[in-house]
Length: 262
Image (cartoon, rainbow, N blue to C red):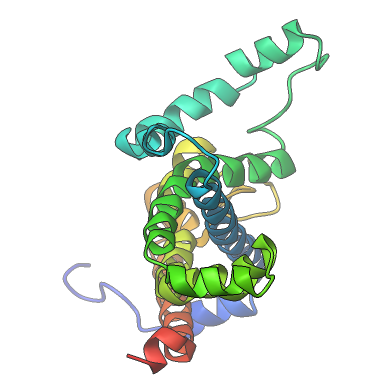
């Protein structure tokens, strides 16, 4: 009886259970999806954010401040509000389904949040809605401070816009933003809000223990703690998330040109 024998020392038994034991069939699929999600969420936000910044900054575009303001408005709305609104818009009885059916584009509701593959695609696209304006603003600042003499010299030498972008603009943007990209990648590994508020980790997956088809390691940890109350397994997942994030950050930061030239 308490206070005697409140716990038993098990060593690395819980870690072994996650890596090679019964929990491996849940851990590795969730880990795989976590890494895929982190890569796609980071790359899509960066790529389309840079393109959007270049388009708005183009010489032929008028009302540049207006267009930037339109896209930045998404940052003014709290993220959890945007995600909950998107969840209501995309559910099986939402207005998106009704609109598409009324115009004759679909015959039945698209399972945006109830089909495993559709749910994964949906969270990536919705995350772009939230993340692209941030990259756009940073890229705009970099583009506005590029050396115009270098660009004009390249134009005089006959370089086209794509060559200028590939050899001058993009390397400068990447040089400045690489540390931020690493930070965004780690943030996406632990991106609790988008997954939890949009899909709740679902749809359910009977092959997983305490996790759904779109659960990341961090949302699985939440489920293990709050719903399943499997605190020992949740502790192991938390430690593994820390190890993954710390090791990746240290390796990537020390390999960047920004770090080497600091």
